[in-house]
Length: 264
Image (cartoon, rainbow, N blue to C red; front, side, top):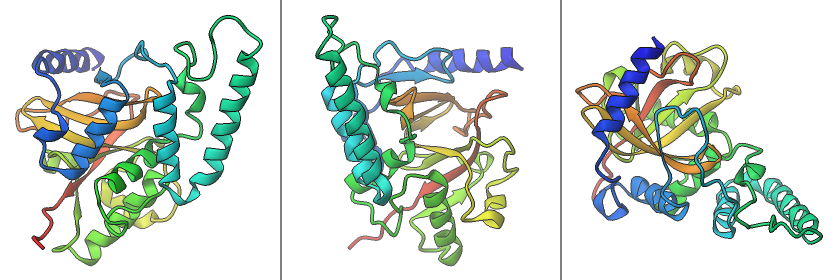
């Protein structure tokens, strides 16, 4: 099974020789906003499920500032910002007595020092606000499960008018602007609909913003991917549907498909 997934990843890499899309090349506001953030973090791209972190993991001043902005986008982010600023100040104070260049914001400081608590949901919340998506369509929160629950409830209450509709990965090929979501828990949901029986309960999940898709390939931008904002290149089938994750990796269970907004 591992060999099969390795072959799929290699075929994906071979299919991905073209550059990722630029913000100007996608019609989705959410995908555009995610790509702007990805470019600001250095345009780091990973294929599949890498065994090692990228080489560029520096906690530059710009990356740190953008991370603070993501936390400021969620209601519960204030205490996290205070914590990260304390960590930053401590690093700067420690570095002031050293001569190895390991000051806060230097090339030797690891951005992973700021990865706790996890900020991938804060990233999604922030890019939704940057994209002009209303809070009622994709609420700001530090937990993926919380905005997923709200979006599922919206879709059930208003099937024809919900801004995002849920699909199982085998049912639909994701498109730019969709959210591709995985279950990171020890006991996986058999289907996204099983979440309806536990709405409001904690469940570790992760979603990325799809920015490009097609036969054999899905590209999605996420936060806190290897401690960075990174574009992931994932294998898909000939119809553009995401293939299952390898054993031991978070399982894809849900696509929240963005619906066209009515003309004003």
